[in-house]
Image 1 (cartoon, rainbow, N blue to C red):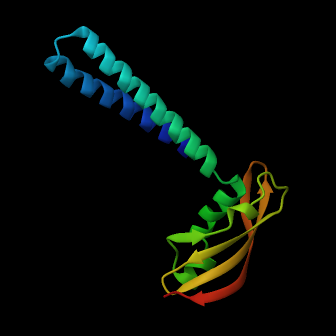
Image 2: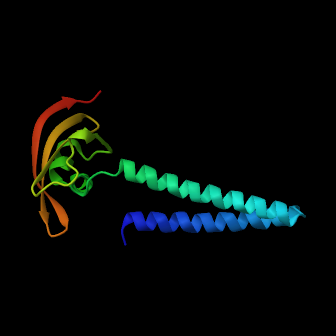
Image 3: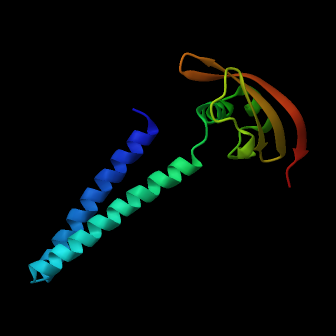
Length: 145
């Protein structure tokens, strides 16, 4: 099961449980069924709008698969661990990413380490439906502040 599906399931379970919890608290305090129905409708609309907003943000901020898989593989790369002892952040120019590339795909990224920043050009090769980090080329190095 992929991460997006897991996030959606957690979001749905959270929405249902908080809706039930809010309803159980409000039901005891409110006497009018019309007010209860109005609050439940408002809460349902808010939950649906929140889900739609999450989907829109996810769609807008979603990067191509080769880039996301490349960053995952850079996190576990021996070269990166030896060079900067891992990293917690990176930067890139999203306009230079190709949305539907042919194999091999190339992207550039700046790895922000504790003591060094590495400017890398990464080449990804596609095997079946998965992208693999085929080559890391170090373009330049800069000391971190």
